[in-house]
Image (tube, rainbow, N blue to C red; front, side, top):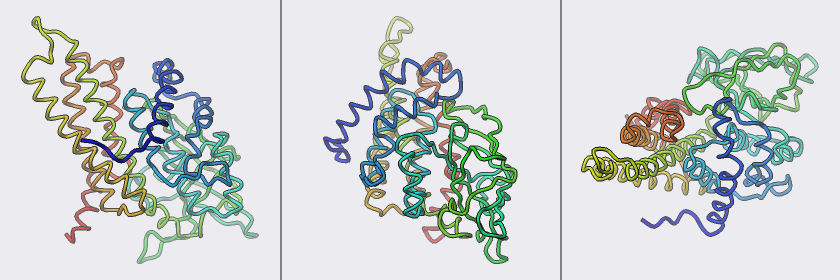
Length: 385
């Protein structure tokens, strides 16, 4: 089916990005995979390509385009090549919306030029050891000084994507105790300088997938955070976190769809080349049926992902719709990638084959950004159940 979601400017961007991936990423990716992290120099190159400033207002050095379609193309092109750009997705998709939504004019002037240039990479730290999806149960605290000039941050965060390379991190912390009838009250957001005394980057976590995306444990011991780095109003941070979940979940949904599409392409190419019993794997009826079923699922996921993209750009994507898109696309990707790996036989289990990396990378999609079970809860509540 003909897609109408992208125009000529988007397709021109796609060509540029594809060429960049082929020359600047693919030749080095095996080493980055082995290292478990991309070099920070990659972010400077991505910035030169303009990827960090697409939706940043022009007065701060960006292009000022209010759209997620260029991000969608990044998902498609990185999945197509079975690579990732490390923690850069968190920098743009997760951190930037908070700066744009909550930042004062003074904060935007301080933060955004370096954000666009890649000189200052950002991450988002919400999850804590032992709390998981229960963000209201966080224990990290930020106590305001008597003179009001700064906060003193203490606590720990885990599963922080981009946490190793990050220069500044949006950290959720308790500034007041929860109310008896409102556990969510008392949480605030801070744009914390990761080079501050007392701020420590702990282990780079050894993950099943997304191995080039650095994920870290962070700890804070009496870290002084200037009051001017408070984002938004004190004690209202939980409501801010919920505001951006729709775009985050769209990103996961779209990324999952692109992984499924890439897996189908890899499998189709493989079975047409691989021979068993004197003929290609593609010639067997089972192979044709499996790939046809996968194609139908990928087409459906593309339609859902595209529709969610259009709704997001129009400011109309609801929490329940984002949850539905995430649930559907991640479950489709799970089924499709598994079937495509099966068609590779033993080679599908070898990391030098892109299908193996996609299989591992895809698994987290049903966990982060809210588990599939949480998505079902949101959808059911929206149904009045």
